[in-house]
Image (cartoon, rainbow, N blue to C red):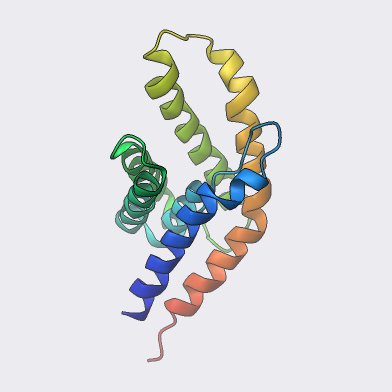
Length: 165
């Protein structure tokens, strides 16, 4: 019960920080993607189902806060959580290099989905422009911010899953 409450507060806090505080952190209109950090981190630590659920909840919170298309962010973060959850039990989650690569890949998945669903459908097919100006800088910015945040999420998860038997 305690774990569920703390995870719910973490999901809501991530959604609120993404929609408010990250605007102040933006550099050249590029801001870090905190929900990708949260979802990919828990994918590595907990597996596909947990990460998909965390991604869905974070996405729904973002959909409700931003008042955009209902389910848009919920769908993408669910997919990000589920697909990155395949790395569970394959990699060690205490080494920082693997989570950073996973978070970078998850952010690229998010960027590709964003490109296809918002730009390509409207006929804007300048993929390499979008890749160089938005996707790669956002991925680098997210990875830089993921270094301290992953350590915090890792410690929180270890503390919540400690067995006393």
